[in-house]
Image (cartoon, rainbow, N blue to C red; front, side, top):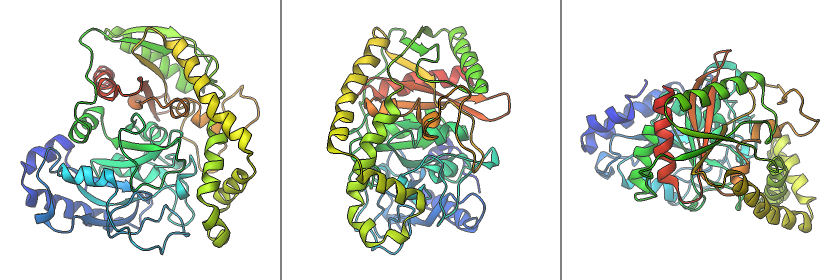
Length: 432
């Protein structure tokens, strides 16, 4: 079953909680039937709330959503995609984001697969299955919010909630040809969320389109900044100062910029040196924070962790306090470098990811890159905006020369979430 689009679903429900609940039951049944299929988008399925009378009537009545399984839904186990927590007690209450969506009338139908403990960029999961790309099952969809991304891309839900500490919502959204939004950190409270890193992580939203994203955002975060009446001043990355980009992605990105210019957007190319250090800053903050959070679990159940996550936690325990504090200080330096580069502009554009979706087992690399971590080519355009705490959204920008999705990343300054979504929707319309 593929759901009707969000606008149609809300209109069809017409504020009728019973009609909305029947749609949710049908969606949950359809997901359950395909539960053992190749997509592996869900870890658990079931409508919440469990009765139609408990469904709220609001602006999102008729909306079906799911959450990454590091987010609490009352009465359900939060596995974090790991054998470590597979048999943990159920959560006693909903996370803030789940409650907010339910209060607006949306219905949760399940919990999505993820890279174990949200600690990876591939979405691969030994226990619950890997998450393949909807455009090519031989490639992964990215992570760590891979299951949430597939649920939206396949039309199983209208909205999925993930988490993003280095690009974990925007990366898979770009790889799957949907919309992924990392808002200003703190705007959506993290209560009830087991994030990867307390100082980098934030909630993220996944929808088919920016138009759908605005509907959801306006329902849960009203009055979050409006678009300026004057034409926005938009900077775009016009060189490889933030790192190299694979040829198919770069050529498509430049064509996208030209298309926006032809549509009347006021664009100016800028160089942004000094941000290439951001992936190193990110891991220097995230790894020790992860090691601290997993100290007791790792010592009690090391055999239940998958090898890649066990190695990451062990590496984090080796980080010195000085290196961690230096990385936190560098975040301020990086923010100043970014502000200097985009001064006088309201928004900033980059590719979302520097590479095409990877085949399973393939190492991420862009020709000309020096040897180093395979994470860097995947994260180089997303992670800087976790480091500086700016909101960023991946907008659908069509297909590259090989028929694979490409995302355009649009960035704004903190607390300009409403304005960012407004301009991103106009860009999406121009690129359609």
